[in-house]
Length: 313
Ligand code: 0GY
Image (spheres, rainbow, N blue to C red):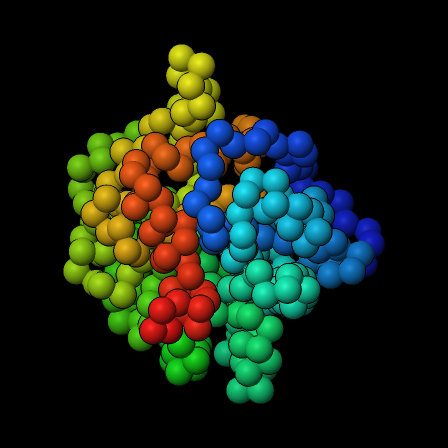
């Protein structure tokens, strides 16, 4: 990829822009709901994309993210550093700082980060660091470097977010289970939903959460995992139905360790761009009672990202 110059970014070929004009969800989110996985991209002219990135997205600004938050009925966002910005966290930090306390962040760090950098990130609202193992997104970072970072952020009370493909879980198991913090897995550990929900691959993921009480899961991204796609059944707003058994199993088995997010602006989707309103209508199919919904959307993300506002926090 040629070196970018600010203001001159050409989107990756075939890039799907985020869906402008999402529908209003029918599902009414509980008051105080948190969109616990979303991104900001640039704008590139202000916050240039990283030279080492594997894709160039469309711009997706903090103002557009906050407008989506209000439209869907969320109260807060957790903004996760995307790989197209590498370890330059400025766009994410700027969004957190100008959110009036309604956004917290998850950063990408290098071993060279100083204690002063960490203090500043913490003051800006960062509460976690993301380790990405998805090969199409990042170059390999040695695990000892990642473990080093995890030990640096643990005293701040931060957690580690991990992103990987289900097939890589056996190889990553020892690393994940020795991390010294809460560990949050992105997108249900990316199961192959054409395989059985009680088959060996997904059972291994369930075992990870069952045997390790510090491991949480985002039950996000049905649009990435689905083979069936967004088509509703019988006019019902019930998209991505093949993902439901996987997400629902995790929500019902580990109700106090699950999070949900839109993943707006949905990087790297090839077939379709989801309507974020329809994505919100996926939630009651995986969290089927008001209590499960409140835990998923309010109690759990608040405990992790705004503990000072929780009772006893
Ligand atoms: C996601 C998923 C993807 C991309 C990234 O940081 C990223 O670039 O996470 C993906 O392509 O699967 O969570 O946004």
